[in-house]
Length: 303
Image (cartoon, rainbow, N blue to C red; front, side):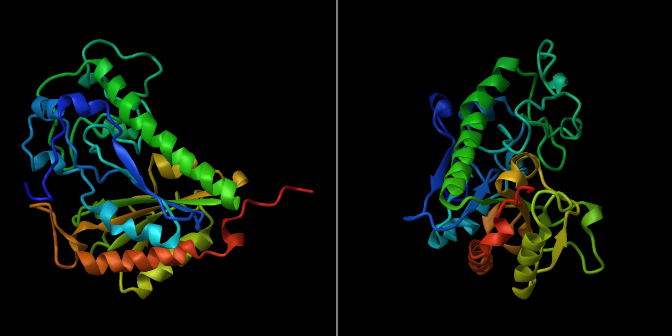
C-alpha cells in the first residue's frame, strides 16, 4: 500500500484512540495546533456501509495537513491530529448536529437537526462528502452516531481541552490554530480578481482572536509569497467559535490552505511542492510561537 492511501482499520479497532498528540520535549509556546480533518484510517465497517469507492470517500479529507504542521514541536508547541476521517465523524461540528433523514426512527429532541451544516449534508455524521456525493447505501441507527461521538469525537475534544489547560497553566494564555485545507476550486465567494486565494484565515470576523494576531499571520504569509483572504468563504468552524474565550486568555484562528499548493487533488498525492509549503508553514509557526505575551494575554479586569 502506498503511504498516501487510506489505512483501513479492523472493525474491532474502531474503539481505539482515533488521534495522537505530537508534544515538544519542553512546552515553550502557548500555541496549540490542531488538525481535525486529515485522518485517513477508515474503519472497515464504515467502508462496507458506504456506496463510494476508496477515492471518492476521501473528497472531504484535508489530506496531509497534519504533516504540514509537524514542525510545531520544534518551537515548543503541541499538535493534535485526528486519525479518523471527517466523513466518519466530524469534530469541527457540535456534538450532535445530525440529519434525521439519515437515521431509522426519530432522533431525540435535543439533537440539532436544523443547523446550516446539517442542511448542507455536513453534520457531525455527514450525509455527503465534498462535492455532494452521498456516503451511505441506506439509513443508520442512532446508536451508530452515539458510538462515533463517544469513542472518537469526545476523546478528541477532551484531549484538545487538556492542551488548552496546559497552556493556560504554563503561560496564562493560549492560541489555538485550527488547520484545514480547501479545494482549489473553492466557493465562488472566495474568488478574487487574481483567482482563488492560497490561504483563508478565519477569525469569525474578528471575534475569535484579536485582529493583531490575524494581521501578523496574514503579513507573514504574504511575505512568504502567498495570497491571503480573511473570513471568506471560511470564517471559522465549531472549534474556532467554541473555544474562543477572551476573558480567560484563549483565542482561536482557523487556517485554510489551497490544496493545489501541495497535492494532486484527483489522485490524493503529495506534489513536489509539498516540502516548500511545509517550510512556509514552519516559518508561520515560528512567528505565531513568538507572539508578544501582551497580544495573547486576557483583558485586564475592570477596576
